[in-house]
Length: 282
Image: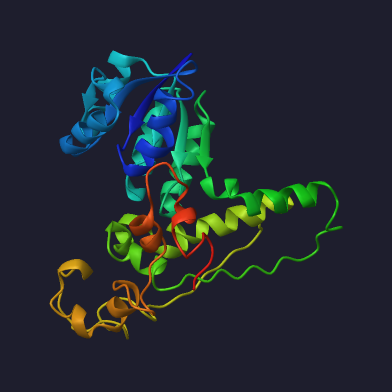
């Protein structure tokens, strides 16, 4: 059984690492340490997963002490994107293996730091991409491996994000480029990885460009140029086209899951008690 130290006690860390480690994979994994800059995250995590009540807690400045005291086999990095590089490099300097959430880092300089640290370490870095496990994406990979698509000579991938899912990034820390590297790093890294994985190749050249077409201070959906607002409490939401589309239960503002949550009865699948089935909109 391996021992894991979790750096960044985020929703992703709790849902995709800690919950499986304390549940289905508890015979194979032990959570040896929690590290986060916010003590409240430790408390919330332990309230959700009581089995972790006695796991020691550390702050970002305590990384070395955490390693000495808990002796983890693997460090899991799942905090804010711009914090990844420092934790990864420190773990490699202790010859520890690292599992990190994507993106591995947010700048080219940090990527080089990590590659250099890995080359000098007995530890290795694994970058996780959960989007590979979407059934459709997995099926595409299977079809390529089975030869059903022939020899792949070109891939044209266009990914469209509507202003419901797209706006979610601009309501949290992802909107700050210094924290996330921008959506071309935080979000598009999924799509680069899918193509790399599907065809088993790596690009020799890449470039990106973008602009704030919908979001930001001058975005066409912004009802007022005022900072510090959030849709749920914004005084301008009554006249906001974005809020009226996605935040209200009108014909044009239905949000995925709203009807199913409202109509569900105990013991029955959500689609049995609703006129709307998963994947369909009336």
